[in-house]
Image 1 (cartoon, rainbow, N blue to C red):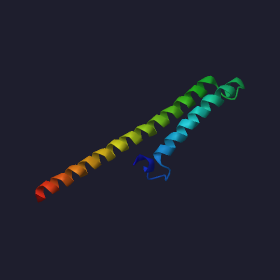
Image 2 (cartoon, one colour):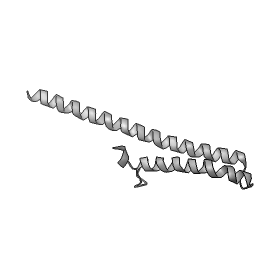
Image 3 (tube, rainbow, N blue to C red):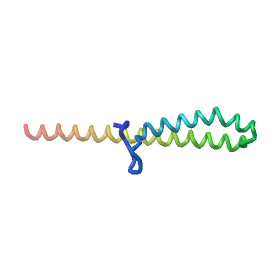
Image 4 (cartoon, helix red, strand yellow):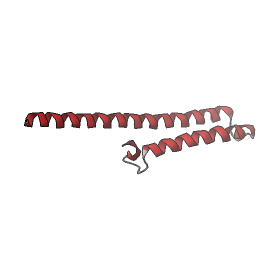
Length: 90
């Protein structure tokens, strides 16, 4: 199940990583315009950093989707194999 899918380098499930990246992108969208107005960051840098965070969130989300599809394919193959074995026994 994708909620428990973790990487070799982390025990944080990918679903939670994706949620964290989405929250961070939202935070940047709220905070960075103020920083641009205060001169703490250029508009170009703010836009890039927000796009980068959104891209990271999308990448992790796609990984989750691919993992889910892979798990479904494995389950279907196992089911087919069970049916095949049952038919051979008959």
